[in-house]
Length: 345
Image 1: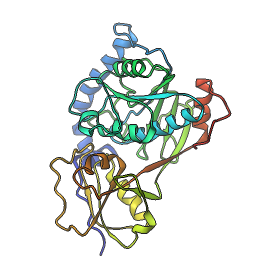
Image 2: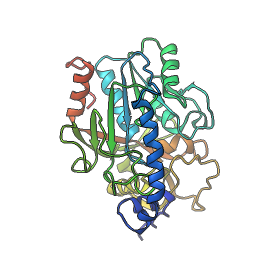
Image 3: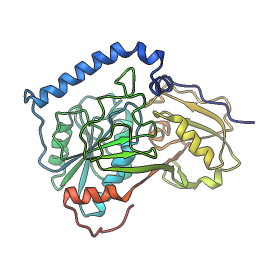
Image 4: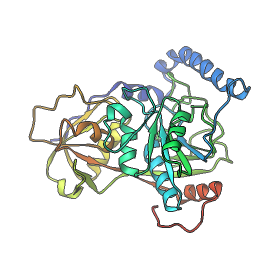
């Protein structure tokens, strides 16, 4: 019997609207005009010098996007940090910490609570081994990180392409396979700001760069794939091949849950039930299916919030394959040694 289709979240419905210039998208165009005017004014204030961006004093690489929803910024941030470490640099990560209940500047340590630092900063702290700081203003996170870890010689900002208050040296724009969708601004389309715009590099999951990308912008392909194993709460690896034949309850609280389910099925796993939840869902009010015989399997981002409630859940990491030219560009723009200490491509 095929697995039941997951119920669409509000973000699923919006993405369906954003793919085309249909009636629903046209109805939202007036709101998109208002959004565009407000965001354009903010950009203009910095362009005219009425507001000034601040630089923390070490090179800053911003990994962001111009579309709403998941584009893969966090995995790209982790891959970038790993490459910088391989080149002998001492990177740190800064982030807003979206979805956290706190408002202060703080470090996201591996043992922090996701409600206090955000799920993605916690994931990055556990996966990267480098200092991760969060703050509403990224420059505050940068200064706090450098004060606590003064040997840090480069900062990678997870998200923040639209955070103009932080001066940066490189901007990397990440696109998922939807590209720019219908090409309209929020809420009529997926764009958080007009595209094209100048960036240092574009990473794209589709076969070709997104529509409108200038010919002189360096563009590199990326592929998302699941790790060949799942992780238990205590860090043990369980081969995905060993889960074949088990009835699984797959859940995902990410922007594109259907992608995760499809990748699990591609590994010949039997998804008896799939559950799509809103992006950054905190699981505090989540109730498990009455079928307790199903093994719960989820994304690595969700696991940091789910494990306190379902300690036996399995988390599958997401790995990226990024075209080597992207790392060559980093080396050239940041004047890194061409001889790595180790390879992590």
